[in-house]
Image (tube, rainbow over all chains, first blue to last red; front, side, top):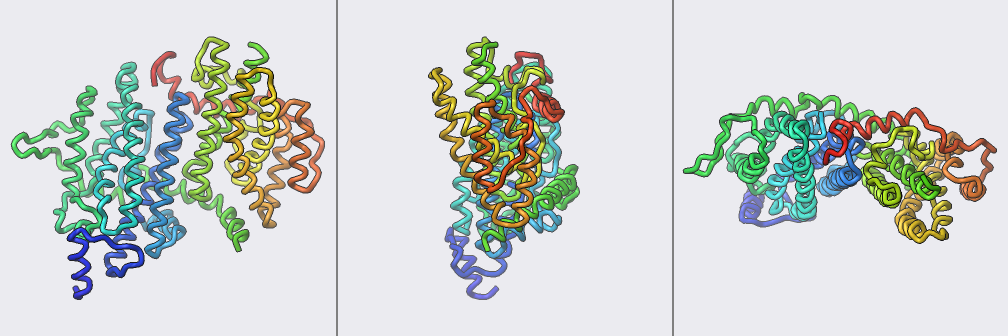
Amino acid sequence: MDTRTQEFLEYVQSGGQVETTDWMPDEYRARLIKFIEMHGNSELMGVLPERDWILRAPTLQRKLALTAKIQDEVGHAQLIYRVVEDLGKPRSACLDDLVSGKAKFHNVFHYPTRTWGDVGVIAWLVDAAAIVSQKALLKCSYAPYARIMKKICWEESFHILHGRDVILALVTGTDEQFELVQEALDRWWEPLMHFHGNPIPADEDPMYVWRIKSQGNEAARQEFLDGYVPQIRELGLTIPDPALRKDEETGVWRFTEPDWEKLRAVVTGHGPASEERLAFRRLSREDVAWVEQVVLAEAA
Amino acid sequence: MSERTDLLLSIADDELVLGWRNSEWTGIAPFLEEDVAFSSIAQNEIGHARALYELAAAELGTTADELAFDRSPAEYRCAPLVQLRKLEWARTIARHWLYETADEIRLAALRASDDPEIAGIAAKMDREEAYHRMHAEMWVERLLSSDEGRARLNEAVDELWPYALGVLDDGLRPELRSRVERRLGRALPDVEPVSRDVHEAELAELLEEMTMVRRSAPAGARW
């Protein structure tokens, strides 16, 4: 590592932040682009599992709330891709890499949504897991990203309230409505345990080393479990892991080791809905390609 | 059902079904900005539908949700223009623009109503619809500025023209014709309007999907 890079590393590790126009090592820029681009892809791909349920929402209020939530997610994608653009990769290149399968998106968006119970579990628990990760970006060494995370975290915390409200209505409803939530939780628990990634020690995680994020994977998962396991149990729901318990002495949650090979397979495009989702996006992009041409012609 | 509730339900159903159709673009519009715009427009339309259903529900002794979700397909009063499944951009823009133009004419008439509740809600809706009109107009401008865009828009308008006329009562149709012809710079054919009594097959499919979750629990269940 050259002296300039070493100094940069020490600067970010002591809490320093950099702006778009500041010098930065090539490796740092490349890692930032990859990480932030994946975040943008995830916000965008995250729209697809939920969008069908706007059309099926069972009351006007739920329809309005879900439309607003999904609109927020698209807005986040828009903001995040701008940050990537400033780092040197245009939005169109991000979208090309997304639909070709070259770029990744988050594991939870590779799964199908089968029932209205999924809508509640996603908005409550997937967004709760996401907010733990996103809060760890508020102190990101790349200042423009840290700034937009403030807005994003604020909106995500609203989504959690919406999700919890959907869940509360269901668990206090008919037996069948309760079962919708339990069955969805059974399916979503594994992806939720995968969500924060494998327990690589923070000091070996390049994202932590460069202080792109301020927390290691396992610390994030522990924070999620601490915050949400008691709430899930309070509603009378059963978490499908008999080994899950908090060690009273150490305060650390114990659980069945998630299958990390499966996580790797899912995020490399082999999840249950990966191909269907990408195909849907490819198709919709082809259908509207002429619109882009018309708009570019107008701008020229 | 009174003439008043019939009027309220016609407009509410238009707004609900168009809002539903606009939501179909969420996640797959040609640009992220349009995703956000169409989601936002859909929320306004559904919000308008809710306010109108509430007025009708007060008179009919029911609730806005029951009116929106629990009627049989034959009872919906929406114009066939909003029932059509048009998940194609030029047709989406043509429908959006034709509907907003017709809606402006309709709202202007309603604002002059003797019924203070109807005049009030029309004025409130019009404040939001003004932004929808700006959005639609921006896209019409864009499409008209290139050969391909103009051809696609004109084709879509021709296809939808009898449906657009069907949004309005007889007396208001000449105004719609004059505005659309002026903007496009050409005459539109004399055609029979597709009236509200027509139910397109796509409406039944839409309602099937719209109510699938709600129907899965007994009436009166909380969601």
